Image (cartoon, rainbow, N blue to C red; front, side, top):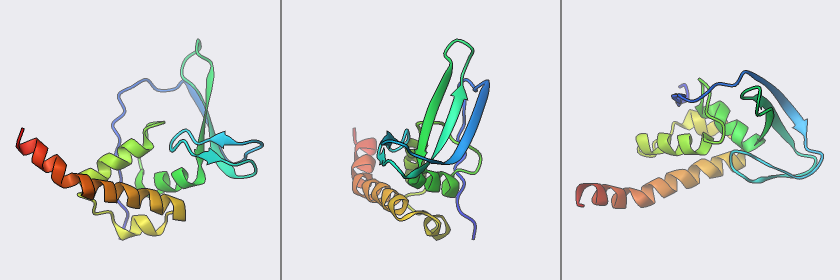
Amino acid sequence: MECACINVAHSGSKPIDSMVIPGVRAKRNELCDECLEEIAAGERFEKTLVQWDLIEGRHTYRMCLDCQSLREAFFCNGYIVNRLHESLWEHVVDTDGEVLEACLASLTPRALAMICVLIEEMWEGFPEIMWSAGHE
């Protein structure tokens, strides 16, 4: 069985140039631009260099292996930088927390914990969301 594919509608500007460098080893502690967790010196991560326009110059985005795992399991048609977890949350809510086992099987242990937290938060907040939406 195939994993779910989150399709993200992108209506913003597109970069004029970008370069993805997978498997970079951190020379010092860095932050993942998606989960904001520390990438420790010596750990591998994905670095993406993006130039949005000629005026702003290049921006560097870093993604830890766990966020890469989530992206590869759930996003087949791209994603919006700095919105991976927000898009994943929307997917969990849209599917009522029913995430396919095939998606979960390919995740790193920390990525699996991240998605489980989202599912638990969705289930814990679901009755309140339903109650407030219908009884305002």
